[in-house]
Image (cartoon, rainbow, N blue to C red):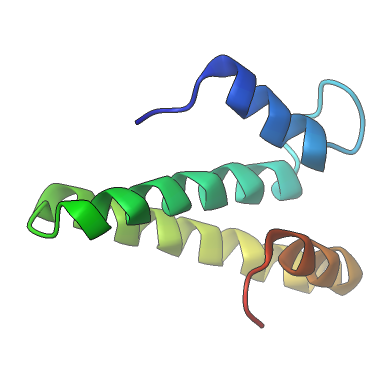
Length: 89
């Protein structure tokens, strides 16, 4: 099930540095994490949905690249973000 505008706005507001911030790495990673969580729940029910499996792997790879960028750019923000989102590392 896709995001509603309200749900997306809540995720953005929780991770934005300032009002209107939709492009920062933290916001993008948070949105990807939410999509990954929803897709994982879908795949628990629909195990043979291969197209969604591929989409999930692409999203995970994209999130990994963004997290690697953030870790190199600002390790303190990286650690705060993974702790806030509950990601391992």
